[in-house]
Amino acid sequence: IYYDPKVISYQTLADIFFTASHDPTQLNRQGNDTGPEYRSAVFYRTPEEKKIVEQTIAKVNASKQYDAKIVTQVVPFQQFWDAEDYHQGYYRLHPENPYIEAVSARKVEHVRKAFPQDLKPVL
Image (cartoon, rainbow, N blue to C red; front, top):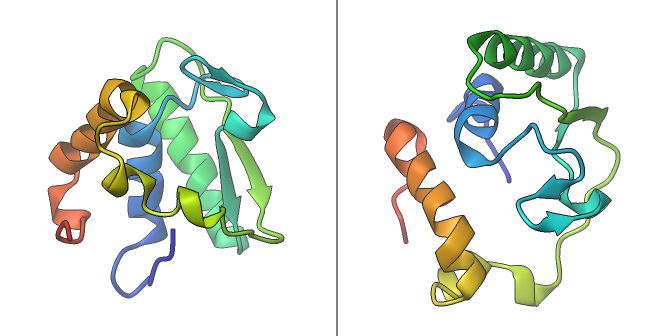
């Protein structure tokens, strides 16, 4: 995700990430997919971003939105590798994929309903 802090705040991204986009209480998994590549992680660049993430985790944990505590890793950004081309735009290009239909589509819809003011128009 690329973001421009003049357009959307890091706080808004954290709110979306922890409240609507995935289950941050599952350690090294999302649904039936398991392994460290499925871990919940947030990468920060500045001490301010780290503080925002930690405060957001505390707020969501206190809200009891989830039955378990958040296990998301909060780690400093070091390097990012783009996924292979066949992964790019996968949701948009493969709406008929069984995993998209069963898992991803409802998560995307949840984000769209919960944060419509913060999303770009669908292309």
